[in-house]
Amino acid sequence: MDKVERAGAGSLSATPTDSIQQWLVKHRDLSHDVDDMCKGVRLKATAQWPETTEGRVCAAARNIEVMRAVPAQGDGRTFQPGLH
Image (cartoon, rainbow, N blue to C red; front, side, top):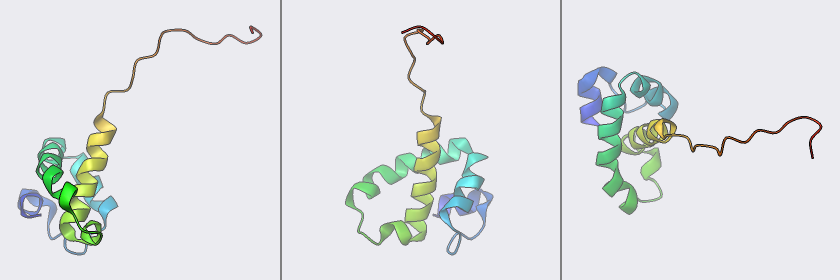
């Protein structure tokens, strides 16, 4: 996607998703923007879309946003050895 290439990622036409993701990890604000832009496209995407440049960039941004999610809080209880 042009926005990511213009931000300094270079040409992404042959870049694998994991490499794009590694670059986007260092540019989290951009990753968030890209993920937002991809939401509508993702819903109408064809089966081949994940293999396109746009699809790989969107997948990389989505992976980062999922990792960003706040983990669920536990109830504070812990398990002790020997207690049943």
